[in-house]
Length: 111
Image 1 (cartoon, rainbow, N blue to C red):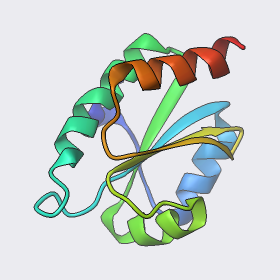
Image 2: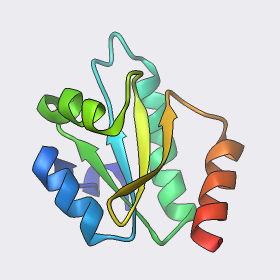
Image 3: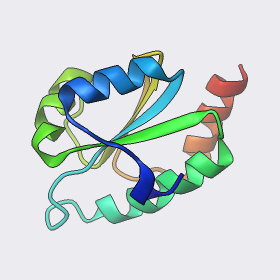
């Protein structure tokens, strides 16, 4: 799945999507001028999807980012939220080293 094919979701669609798939990465991006790491995270997500085929991803639409950040306890952007059956398993604010993503995902998906 490429970044271009990830669904863009509002608040309600994010909830439905997360409950419809076992593992979902919800991507919260904010103003790229203020948060230039958006681009780094946007490059990492397709690589995570390739490495972990059970994983699905959705991108929050700009108008829904603030509401979803409040719901999922995010105060730093960009952020990835790993959900399992709609429940938060992990929050990654900003860009993280590849090994952090890999370790957490391998533990969760294979554990």
